[in-house]
Amino acid sequence: MMAELTLAARWKGEHQVLDDLFGEFLMALDKADVEATRIAIEEFDTLLRRHTEREEEQVFAPSAARHLGPPEEGESEEARLFRELRLEHVQVREVSGMILRLLSEAADLEGARRLAPNLARRWDAHTSREERELPRFMSDLT
Image 1 (tube, rainbow, N blue to C red):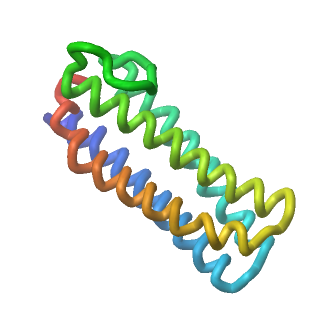
Image 2 (cartoon, helix red, strand yellow):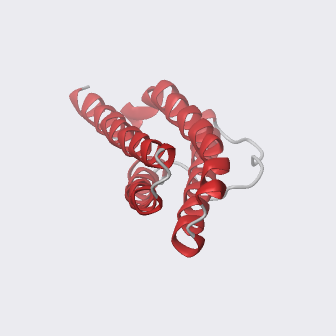
Image 3 (cartoon, rainbow, N blue to C red):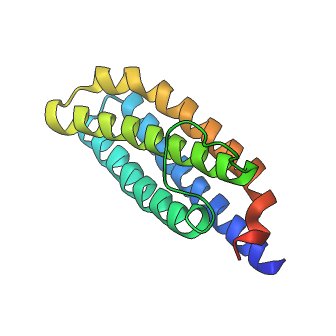
């Protein structure tokens, strides 16, 4: 049981750090500071990629195939959840990466401003779902 709490607490803690970094990005964006906004989203994006890779390797990989397509016949509830969460990871990383590219390549604050609500919605929905649904399967992963 302690290992379950430790693993769940670890992911939740990383989500909080990412939330804080995203808040820094939004504050810099609100101030229209291109360099601060780029640095903030770069920090968010780097940690996001590290976090989701570890999660996929340590949590999802032991019990689910790595496919992202439609459900396979007879797919378990656990495999469905892991597949859907992995797909959400891809989507969040793509939007974060697009914002980073807009700021790095074109200093496009307006483009970043247009994408920020999309990233915020996806990230919030994903972490809420993960923190709510993933603990049911944690005992199988320790």
